[in-house]
Image (cartoon, rainbow, N blue to C red; front, side, top):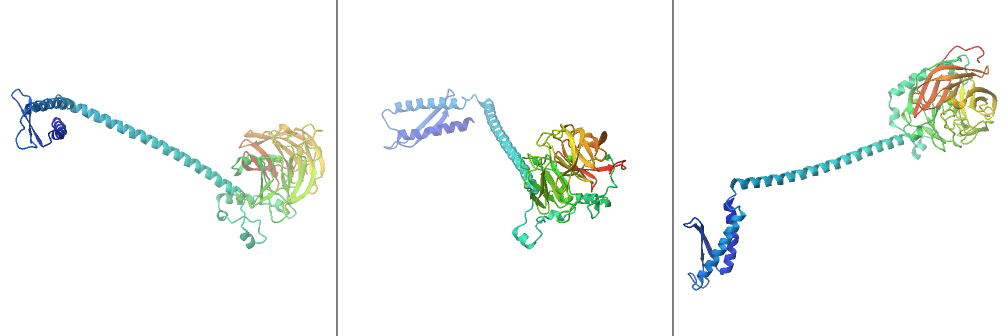
Amino acid sequence: MWLPASVLCLSCLLPTLRGQDGGRASLRRSGDHSGRCQYTFTVASPEGPGCPAGDSGAETEALLSRLTLLEAQVGRLVGGGEGGPAGAGAGDAAGLGEAYARVTGERDQLRQDKEHLNRQVRDLMKRVDELSLETEALKQKPCRPSPDAARDQPGNSRRPASNPANNVPSASYQEMKAEVTEVPASFLLPDGGHNQTGCGELVAVGDPVLHRKADSITGKYGVWLQDPEPRGLPYTNKTVWRIDAVGRDVRQLFAYEDMEQFSRGFPMKVLVLPEAVESTGAALYRGSLYFQRRLSRTLIRFDLASESPAARLDLPHAGFHGQHPYSWGGYTDIDLAVDEQGLWAIYSTSKAKGAVVISKLDPGSLEVKRSWETKIRKNSVGNAFMVCGRLYTVASYTAPNTTINHVFDTATGAGRAIAVPFKNKYRYNSMVDYNHAQRKLFSWDNHHMTTYDVTLGAASPGSS
Ligand code: CA
């Protein structure tokens, strides 16, 4: 390290010497008797060969002085000959420090890059989730056939747009086939299936069977039903009907071809109701949807085939919009029900002071044919339904293991407490309705649309 540095510094000096003398100069270095360095210059004169006369001694002295200064400067720069191994160690340490600083900087940069990539991954995953939700929402929308398709298939506008998935057999389809075969033949008679002989008291309710889970907030509660006594085409007892009851202007009535289509989420048609529906008390019977008009005690019969109102009547003295709801609230003041004996309204009046009133309705005109007043506080029970002319109330809409806790028989005008186990599996049961053709309860429990098998005992004296 000593030698190259010396040469480098001396070579820097030579041009200066050349410039001053106006000619070429050479330098020789040798030791003197005292062990010091001695430098000798030879300078070519621009005027002729040989050294110039005159003050050459002074010039030499000046050069020697400058060279001495130069030697001292070079010695200082390279450590004055005292460097050696120690100097090299310091240089190595400095190099390591520099390398360490560089590696540390690269590490920090990589960390920043990693964090940036992680953020991108998180953003992408969030976007994937959003797209999945959008896909599900699109699946919910009814398929609209194109004008060309409509021309190609006149009179077939109720069919859904082609969906390849509809042609794929699925496990759920097999399950529903099995379920349909369980319908008692006595309920499939051409006259609408009126069969009183199977009636008896409710003795057991099975576990809920899930058919569909709503995937948005509008499916928190609602109504879903099948018509136990359909009135010919285009709808059958296999058609599934659904109303998402969340919202202030509920008018959409979704129709699904069958339970399999219902479970997979493709409605074949959406009917728009002429009035907004109040709450979850609607019923289906003999080709009509019966529902309470929002913010009123008006009942409407909506004919499904013609898609138009067929009857409209106020339910006399009935409380509405939060006056006498079930315990879960939700404006469940008027609950319509269907059983083997026909169409019923379950509600209360100011005269009854919140006790459950049952009225038998004319399914054509909606007129009240007869009413019964019970001793059951309507706001103390979670829901109610009719089976064989008897009212049954569900004790709780949230308790996962609750009971059917009251029965009131319209044939005798008497009621009593009972305790038939009932499960609110999803802990927010907003609708319980009986379907006598399938002998099942339909319920809407916190986004989950379920059915329960019902077991009836022997007919008791006085029952119809
Ligand atoms: Ca009900």
